[in-house]
Figure 1 (tube, helix red, strand yellow):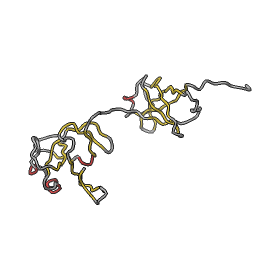
Figure 2 (cartoon, one colour):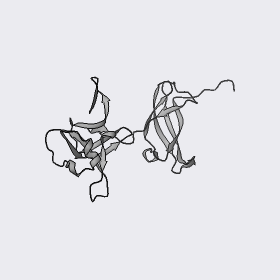
Figure 3 (cartoon, one colour):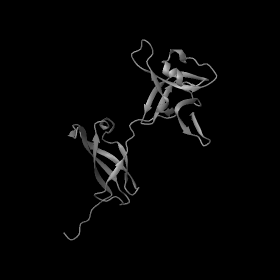
Figure 4 (cartoon, helix red, strand yellow):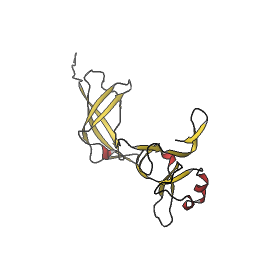
Length: 187
């Protein structure tokens, strides 16, 4: 063959999805992709295996993504990175995961998530500091209350607060951070 003409306006990309993320990938889902050069592409899942293959102790589900390539910048053999948003929340309160503390109330089987809030006013539902374990009591600064919180979505660094904290609350973090004028533990 002297000349080969190909239509590269739509390319097929083979993906491998691990068992933690398989539940979030379905045929027809749009997945943004990006090549090593920073070019962005939109892919659509054409197929995803129902039965996975064991690879080094992890179950991998092979799939096929159809990627639009109208400008022709994507070439065969390129590697693409992609992200899948598995959950999202709009207009929510998030705090660093390190700001959430846990203790087991007497008689409870489940630990209670709490945050320490700087405030001069009493709040309904606040936990009496004397009910906390002694080591926790020592950490709580004066002028603060301890509020039980209900947690929502989270990642490695942040957690969504569904109840217990209000927008504008100053939450105590025992790990100091630089605020420009020195160190502060308020966020």
